[in-house]
Length: 161
Image 1 (tube, rainbow, N blue to C red):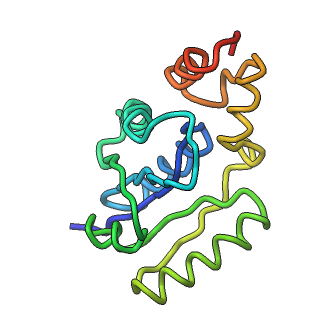
Image 2: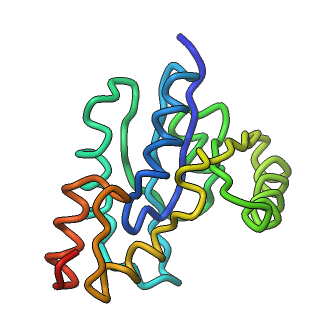
Image 3: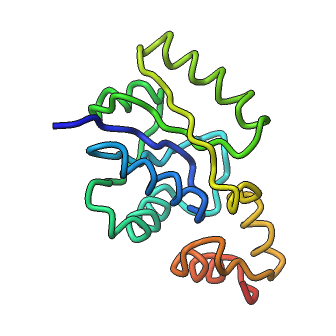
């Protein structure tokens, strides 16, 4: 039995950048739990259940990855899932400034370490917000998200996506 990592996020929607971090994490840990955050202060495009289903489809080929949702404190979810570490992808220094505070708080209140994984440079510009904005204005997001996610975006937002 090896270590379990938790990859948390909103994933609204899941992008190829998210999947790169999840896949790379799955090569380094025995098990990976992808936790889809239910955040009442945000107005997501997709419901929590839709985001979970989109992610499950996207990671279908990764046998050591499971997907679920959570609300509340990340450290509580990590503990409930048997996760030993939290893995977060970083695109830029601006991500680090926020994430280091979260990592230090999670260590302080839950005793759980956070590992930072730099994003593959090919995805360093990519964010769910940017994908939604492009899709909302009818831009093509092919190659930025899995095809089933692109189709869900087009269905939800209309346009040529």
